[in-house]
Length: 226
Ligand code: DX5
Ligand code: ZN
Image (cartoon, rainbow, N blue to C red; front, side, top):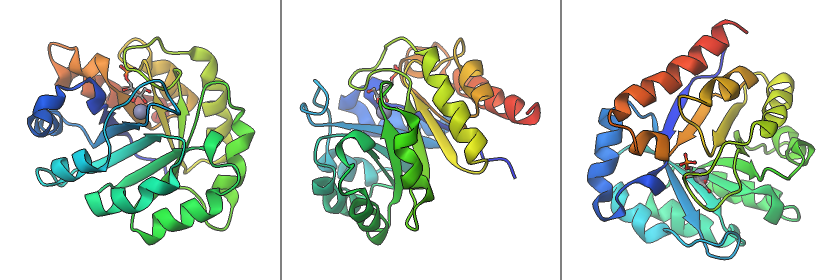
């Protein structure tokens, strides 16, 4: 069975002062997930939101909150984010090489869905053990820009990693994040990505609902022709 398309607007591009209504608007426009970029100003040179903001948003929505942790110490975030109501917890492999087993275990114990992310320069082989272990992650996020900021240019060379993952794991959720929009989605969809994060292309559009449906259609079309 083909994996399901999930379109996840990145709330980093929203008006943070109106987060609840921005979230509501995206769900009304057809979003499946809300992508929440958590940055610590250390792993990446930007500082965004943490558990208190997730907790506030959770009071306004039942949506799947797809949390992407661009932080140096993801272990410290498991408990607070679980309490805050996070749904997915995706950490970066680059910081968790020595303790990912414990981390994945804790994420699951706390009732969240574990995912692992990799930066453009990180070889895809580094996540294989996390997908194949006895306590596996349930999603791989292939960064298609350097993490840290919205509005950057999609890096097509990262598609080799998506292709390799899809070939090896036909039923794995593979997420792409950075520079995705109507002009780049076909590359990601045909490589095998099914979870699509899009910030500036959705929030910057006159009709975000159209962009969301273009993204979904591209994933579905690619699945049908593969
Ligand atoms: C970047 C973040 C992304 C970002 C994507 O580090 O992980 O989620 O918000 O934004 P766009 O779609 O504008 O590249
Ligand atoms: Zn992200």
